[in-house]
Image (cartoon, rainbow, N blue to C red):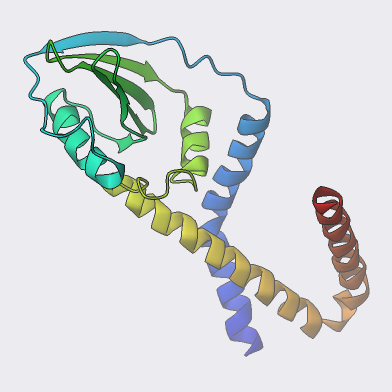
Length: 203
């Protein structure tokens, strides 16, 4: 039991370590980076765009599916964030994201034109995007891109593996008598810090 647990702890820890490092680095970026999202690196206008029927009134995943017919026409792929209909101007706004690129498609339903604005993102911003993706917001829309669905599985797997490594780490610590005292002190310090912080947030 000890040998199997030790080997799984070691090798699964090595496997998941790149994902943990990526999540950790992206936290620093999310907390401290300043990114100007208003500057587009390129803009292109497409004419004669086919507008899917009912896109003005569609909601949820149905709206995303209809918007996908527009993104395919203008050569844009990625995760659709939402579909916003501006009734007074008869426009549809579709933001599309993927690591390395943020795109906004502004569709004029009357003129049947689409203005595509693209903004390239750096490496750290790409990692931060993966950290936030797919995210809890607009849950009925999330995962509308194949690679986002795949990343969701990887993110969930990372959580499960970290939980496994944490549990097996406690087991291995308990089996090594020489490490019990210092391990108990560190475990207690971590528990007190976590409980104090959570209590401060909840109060």
